[in-house]
Image (cartoon, helix red, strand yellow):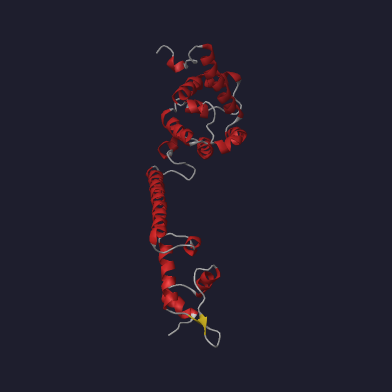
Length: 251
């Protein structure tokens, strides 16, 4: 007894449209037709549809199924490849679940990248924005360094965050002097951060990162960062220690 396309679709748990698509891409052979022109499907077609469904369940793309030998070493190697893909997918899912758990634990918001949830409350919106951009542009070591820096070095953050846009030269110099030793320590502990550790294909994005800093922080804060960098590295050139913060004097 032959089946119509609709009946075959019902038996296979699929749709008429899917069967027609399989015919079009060569996955399913066209059946013979009755005198009235209707297709007449047989058991072999049903088995093939179920086989395709099984391979799809295993994660195999239709393009691969079309050229697949369903037995022998070639099929075994295909299964090994699928297994490796699934292992990668599971590992990625575990990483994502850990990131979600961290966000939930610290009630973090959407602009907090992975690894920063525990310190998110100490970051200003501008800080979080720069961190998110940097996480996207930095290489793997740079991202790791950024997480450690955010967790370990917040000594001058309050003073820097409080710098108003109309700060005078004296205030800018004072905060820059306070930030310089922190910046030098960061560069000593994480040498790769002396210049933005951009991934090779994104090195051309340095001007864009600079522009982001200029837009996210006020002009006085940007000048503080510039002077602090100069002070920290000038101390290295001169062979002298970086400027001492007032609260460290006499220690």
